[in-house]
Amino acid sequence: MKKIIGLLAMYASLAVVATPAFATIFQLTAQAQTPAQTPAAPAKPAPAQGACTDESKAAWYADFTKFRTSDAKKAYEAGKQYLTACPTEQGQIPDYLKKWVAAYEKEARKLKVTPLIYGEKKYAEGLTMAKEILAEEPENLRVIIDLGYGSYLAAATLKNESYNTDALANIRKAIQLIESGKAPESWAPFKGKDDTLAYLYNSLGRITLKTNQSEGLTALIKSAQFESDLKKDPWTYFFIATAYEAGPYAKLSADYKAKFEGKDETPESKLALANVQQVIDRMIDGYARAVALAGSDPKYQANKPEWLESLTTWYKYRHNQSDAGLTDLIAGVMSKPLPPEPTPLTTLPAAPATSTAPAAGSTSTAEASAAPGAAAPAANKTTPTTTTTTTKSTATPTATPKPPVKPKNNHRRR
Image 1 (cartoon, one colour):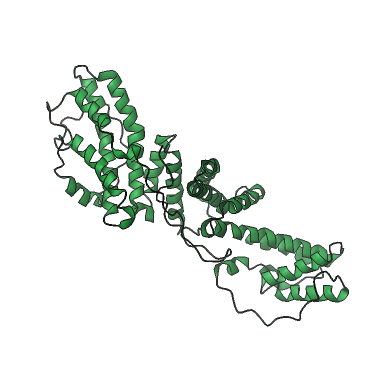
Image 2: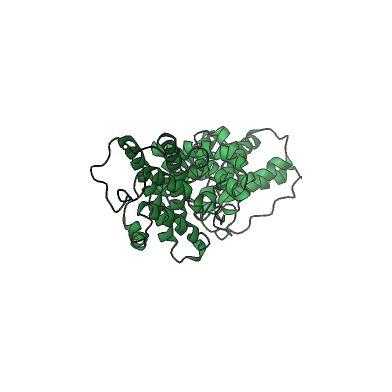
């Protein structure tokens, strides 16, 4: 808005429009975020459009000057009528009106992007408009955020992953700009900086979960660090658990089997197994948080049994096929900080805790390493039901949209 005011101020030197109040000519943002005010008494009707006469031009320009500091939309309509009716008109007035109308339309276009994407869910129209703006203003953070997160929503809602290319590029750029200290004119429809980063990291994690589990896991854990609704969303922790399972666990387990399966136990094999087990413990934590947060909420009851099954499978593997203590784990897990990604062990712990590892001699090393692979949790074969990703808004395109409902399952595992 400051940029557009500055742009219009350059034109104030024109004698026909010089006025001290010129800097207040644009009030689109206020109009977009507040209820419409009671309109002023109607001005004298202008001649019908198309009648390019001295009388009609005078009337249109009178309306323009009357409303330019109080009702930008009406001023725009009057100026547009003038230019439409008199397309070949030359002079200071039509030249000024062309610049004013163009500036208005450019600013109005910016204000339409967010409502189109989050409120009306017109993704194709909103994203196309965002790209046009970004081509002119490549560092416009508000548009970068909307283009990134909006493309993510489009991919999930329309089940068209081609949108994810734009989503990834712009989400990463938005995160980089925000973390370097940049801020948009408005964080809406998000609640603020942290809320915006939480959603950007979460969507980045979900998109990359299939192709780059390491990046996906890091992003998902990062998203859960911010104070946002996602911190209390069971899907956040379900995806963290499955990111561990599809990424670090799958690799470490495969490496263990290739090197040590069917062989005598050695210090090296014990260390390799310990690294597998600490990843499994993170999976257990993630599934436990998902189950705990699901509670009795009807929205999660279709998926909760599968999460609990996965949790039970891995918990029993780490506790000699016993589920003793599992209920207490679920009850207390959210009172503990989310554990960070584990640091690879280079030496064996002095004395492994019997509460988190199979008792010595209870099973062979080969059997222990095979157990998780043989009893893979249902998460690997489950495609949770996709739910609504944005709040349905009845607001007009220029109204401030409500924050989007937190995505439930915008990444389908295949």
